[in-house]
Image (cartoon, rainbow, N blue to C red; front, side, top):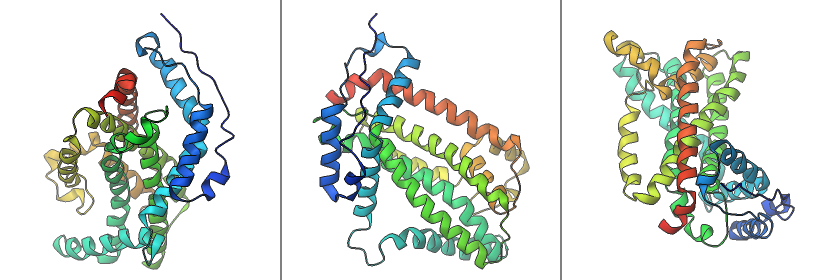
Length: 311
């Protein structure tokens, strides 16, 4: 049984100067540095334990952290390039979506539009982050075919870039939520800082899902279209635009096992109610995150060598 041999270089070629470069220049510079310095011996995954594989993969990611930042910055630039309002759309999009949903569903469920607007927005943020991360992330490896065929890059790099880009958008949207909550008179307490660990858990969960589906899409290209339909249906199972009280009591216990619903609840308790979420609310998100992360990483270990030949 052979053992993995890994060089542990420090990537000096990808520095903050990379982040100041524009478009393809920054990405080319980052990839050149990776090609020159991230040397490793590629071996059969069967000769490497799962723990060793996980450590090696995480080590490789730390060695290309500046490349990650460079790709994320360029993704954001491309997204809002030639737009009159630019990054302001990161604030306006969720606000406008919230306004439409609030106008419709506050009348349907006879709710006060002001408090219901914050309720909708707080549930919409984690869902939008998860939905966008999985949809965009599912095609991240196939979309990076030209990069992957040029130089060795850890396969989870591109799903991580996608989810990190959506994470930056989440940060902008959360600023909009705080501003809107203040304007509408919602009292924010210290518990709002719990959003940091909650989002960290949501980030890992979304990244794990994106990684798994990005690998699966390499083998089954129609999966991206199926995911879009599936996530569209999943949206209605999450109490974002409706309170859980409208759900028949015999079905309400199912929400205890629904990780996305629990994520939305964690955000709402911390932001809207100003309280610390109880342990029972954390259980489903934590268990689901650990489970999906292990499955995604194990899938990557089994397919790492084969992916490049399937692109």
